[in-house]
Amino acid sequence: MLKVSENIYYVGASDKHLDLFESHFIVPNGMAYNSYVILDEKIAVMDSIDEKLGDEWLKNVKEVLKGRKPDYLVIQHMEPDHSANIFKLVDEYPDVTLVGGEMTFNMLSNFHRGKTFKNKLVIKEGDELSLGKHTLKFVFAPMVHWPEVFVSFEKSEGILFSADAFGKFGAFDYEEDWACEARRYYFGIVGKYGLQVQMLLKKAANLDIKMICPLHGPILKENLGYYLGLYDKWSKYEPEVDGVFIAYTSVYGHTKAVALEIVEKLKAKGCPKVSTCDLSREDMYEAVEDANKFGKIILGTTTYNMSIFPHMNEFLTALVERNWQNKKVGFIQNGSWAPVSGKLMKEKLANCKNLVFVEPMVNLVSSKSDANEKEIDALVEAMLK
Image (tube, rainbow, N blue to C red; front, side, top):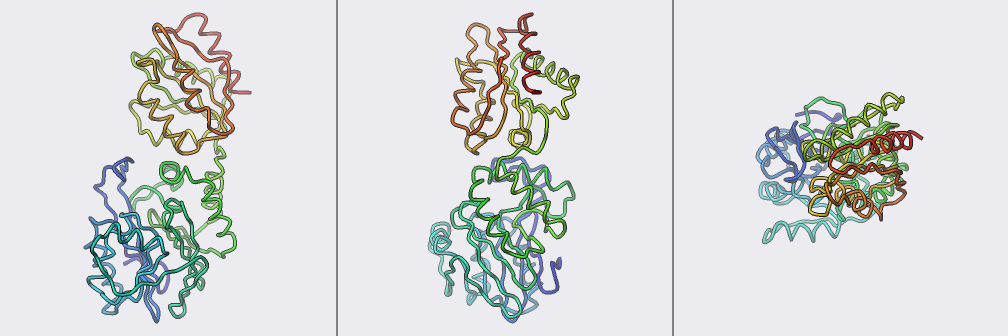
């Protein structure tokens, strides 16, 4: 088993065959489900893992325990990918004490109906649990990203067991740039709760954190300011990239052609970074990621059944649900007899905070006209201001 430190071990597992996380998010590199064991005078297991990997997890736990019995199972998050195997441990070690908040145990009874256990410890904000040399301090993090969530700070080594915070997509041993898949994970799953993440970061600022052990993705040991800084930026909905992101749908290619023409004109004018996404063909949550990463965005779509083309409508719904804000937004609309998609996109985004809608809108009627060329040039100039 992987040693996190002298007496702390990683006992999680990865599902490398998973296609969709939460039946929703594409995970080409699988998914890690992390769990840890702290060995001391008393032993704490930090969370369980996804049901499919329960046998592997219990085998890993037993390997680390070497015949000892766990005293505590700390349940930081009741989502089933972290709680499904609680009773696999309880069945094996009936005297183990389950540790969680009041809401944890309410959810436990709902997810595991009819299951019983002997011992529980109900904790509150700031409570501490001594294991001997190691002491866990519990810090509640409601709505990061479920209401019962708390994180655990191990005081002697400065290790933050961070629940789903600082997680990412991908198997535990898959090496890749952290920020890309962590950003897609954050904005896909946690993004709505920026205010709550800010509250957790303020609490974390009072802790001397030397290592972060999340429930998904790699253990973070170095340059923690980088990871904390990105979480701060993401949860404030601040752009990371000076450039323009163009998200479009196109039925017969005319809207796409204009979108790609705008790309070339932006580059010719010296735009530092331009990225595009065909929402009908590419990962929707890569697009959600880029829509948050960039400070400027152009949305292009056709009018469809007097509404917004379905994939663009889904994309805008995802942004609105995640409190998308602080952007400069331009529009391309298309329609063969009654183009209204631009107007409807604006209406859909009307309640988002701090959006600046850029004029002019590029108004296509079936295909690009000479008049559209002037609109395109004006939109490019407006986006670059």
